[in-house]
Every structure is written in structure tokens, then in C-alpha cells.
Amino acid sequence: MRTIRTDQALSEFINSRISANLSPRTIEWYEDRLSPFVKSWPNLPRRPEPIEDFLAIVQGSPETKRDSFNALRTFFKFICQRHRIPNPMEAVTPPRRPKTRMATLEANELVMLLQPVDDLRDKTILTLITDNGMRAGEVCSLLKHNIKQETVLVCGKTGWREVPISDETRELLLQVAAQSADDYVFHNDHGKPISRFSIYRIVRKHMEKAGIKGPKLGSHRIRHGFGKNFLV
Image (cartoon, rainbow, N blue to C red; front, side, top):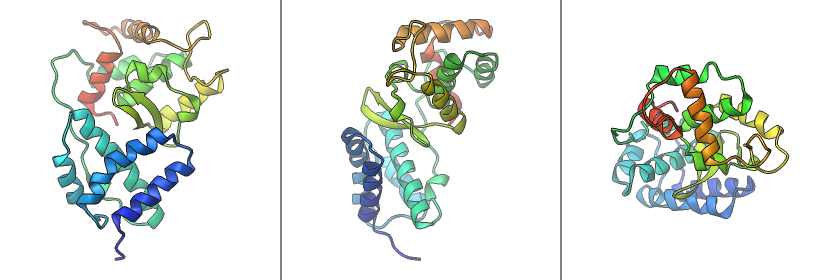
């Protein structure tokens, strides 16, 4: 089996991101998270164990560890498809989020929340949050050109990052984006870019309609429901 140097694989990946017109900040985000992996493994691992060993020593918050996992997942998917080799990341379990006492939605409540929603914008917002745990601020600032094939590019608390999305979520996003007259994906009822408060009201309205009771009926509760149930 031919050996692939990890630094060469990273160069191929970064060049592909540049060709896809990702922003310099996003390129830097990938380089920051993948460069330590290159130093740890000069030759591209073909088994999941080296990747798991690397993720185990990543320093920082749970969000930092999950960012490293997401960067590696996107990197390995690209390289393995290009070189037609098995993808070891498929056997790597995502880092778990820490347990929290915050009220969260159970899996059946997430289903109840999404099923009766007819409004395209509202359904897309709810699906997006439950799909990957995006923050309300990230949803507000989402731009049309940042909807990629399998991810969306968002600006969060730690800077720019790519967040995986399902095929269903992407299709909904494209439908909403097609109705937008400017660069933003989501707008309020007056045609202006949507605010965090508007998202909170949308989430609260549909939680109440679904009969979901409890404190803090907002997007934060859905995000933690996502983390608890690992919907991606």
C-alpha cells in the first residue's frame, strides 16, 4: 500500500479549500487544527487508532476538541476520496460533550418539535440547530455563499469554522437562500437580517405549539439537546 506523507496531504487539502474560495480565516482555521496532527504523524495513518490517540491529547475546551475532530473529518474525507483509500475517520467516535444540568430536549421532543412546522424559514432554522448544534448568532450571520456541499461556514465564538450538515438541512437552506434578496440566508418578517431575539421567539413559539414544557424555551435548549442525543 502506497505511503502518503501527511504534510503533502495537508497541502493538497489546503489547496482544495483555496480553490473552493474559502476565506483566508477559514484556511488559517484548518491549518491551526491540522498542523499539530501533521507533526504527530509524518505518514498519513490508515487506521483509526493514531487519530484517536491524537484527539486524546488535544488541549483546550470540549469545543476545541470537537473543532479538531471536525477538521480531521473533513480533511480525511477529501484525501481518502481523492486517493481512493479507506477512510479511518469513519471509525472514530466524536468527542463527547460534557454533561450539563441545563434543561435539554429529549430525542422524542426534538421529533415533536420538527414534525408540525410548515413555515420554510422556521423549519430550516429548527432543523439547522438540531442538526449540528449551531448557536443563534451563527444562524443569524449565515451567508448564502457559505453554504457548501456538506458543511456551512459560520463565524462563532472561536472564529470561523466549518460545521457539517445533513443533505436534508442543505436542501432546506438552499430553498430559503433562493428567496433571499441579499447575502443573508435568514430574514425577519420585515425583510431585514434576522436577529437572535427573533430566533428565540421562533423557537419558543414552536416549542409551545408542540407542547414542550419547561424553563428556557429557546435555541440554547435545542443546542444542548443536540449535544445530548448526538444527532450528527
